[in-house]
Image (cartoon, rainbow over all chains, first blue to last red; front, side):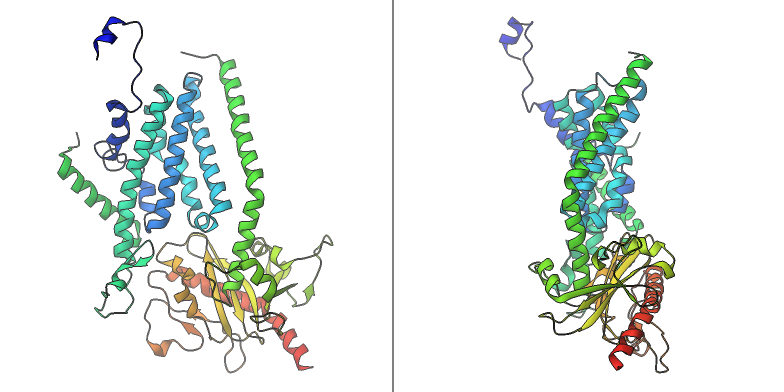
Length: 228
Length: 248
């Protein structure tokens, strides 16, 4: 800290908009404190929606939206929320935001709505969101909470996108619906122009477990994280 | 800090009113757009049974030009008014709601494809079908020739089939398998068209009443077969009357 601060201890210097601590709020959940791979939360949706890239992308955006805004609203009224009913208040806020997402999808992205509406509804029960509200937003300032929500949301997003990438690639032989293996002339029989024989195990949630396990393994190998 | 019961109740009431109000406003505000989305989606599916649709197709304009519709009852007679005397519009008949009634009481919309330029006389009849898949409902639109005996095109959709498995009924390649299949055998009995179990069945198994299946999606295929058979039967009286009129 500068000498100036010490001279005037009464006036506390405001923290820079992107201080190291605040950057940490966003970056920690991406790797060291990832909600899926380290905290192992939100696994259900990571298994359910990740068969293809496109719906996974929409799901990621929906979750980021819900987590950021629920963190913001809970944090903004954290001093008003009665302790005894805080969980139900958190649920009500999350449910409202999720319903908003669902309604907007129905109006402007009907195809996605048809595909995802069940899973979008289940964001309400995503433990990552409730966990952040309870652990962070209910005790921190709104701006910090938004950053924290963004971090957790992105941490969730990259993992499910990575899982979806491998599941769609090896399951359907495609990425974002683009048939990769056929494009490079490789197929089940080795003949150019044949269909890629779809791989059922990658479509089933079991495939997601495999991919997720491998991602967790690779990540822990690199970071040296050990479960205590 | 322990708040009083009074505070907790007031807080909950205010929160409920605010959140409820927010949802109500959104729902009201988005309703017209949602209705448009649903209408566009329905018309897209109907047209999809008879023609290729790409991103540039102006679905509503094309639909108005090439499709004429009517509603028939279980006996195959055209009905123009519902029980309350309101005019019936085939596009507004909710096939899902009808599906929940017993077959005798249902309304059956028929969409007549009048050829690419419209008004050239009926080219094919498009009928909606509705049934149960593995996880949730499946539905679709089947285009039949003017005698109601041969499939000219099929378009399927689903609410929650497994992506990559049962959800493949929405793929053009799967729907294409139904084209040209026959509903009636040589004795004139309705045998419907069945999707087989498993994929890459031998050519010999794929006669005019059978199409190749989707690997890993047997239950969806079973639901699909049941759905087709039922609806072909429901629409049978209508087509019988159509042929009778044509013969006169």
